[in-house]
Image (cartoon, rainbow, N blue to C red; front, side, top):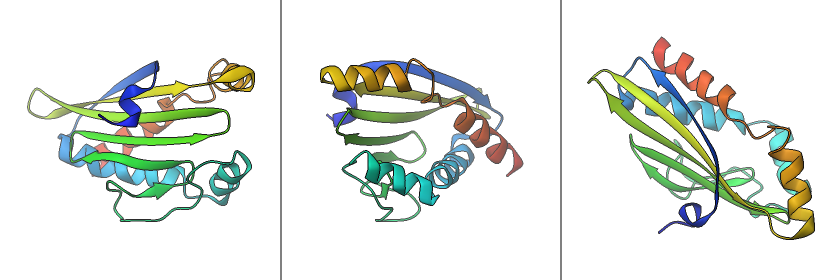
Length: 150
């Protein structure tokens, strides 16, 4: 069992995409990689004392790849991409699942899991979850647009 699977559920979002899971998978990998490609992501990961601060490992993303703030814990093409990470306020995971529907569509689901130990963790949760800063709708929408253009 993965670390991500053991964390408490926070929320889940989904979007229907008019392509096969294999096409959606490639778009998702591109969107996730691009989302963490900026220097701001690396700086943020370092300021929070994340376990993973610099991009490294195999590309395209695969089990063992690292993005600022995350490492790829599971990459089961074209079904599941699980990113996990941690810093001084939280242990967390983003789990993307791709389900084929009707033989030509994909339901892309993004689940957030996280633990926020201690008083500082609870304050961090209120800031990130309470203000919806963690919400994945933008990444889901970007994956949809990218997949449907392919």
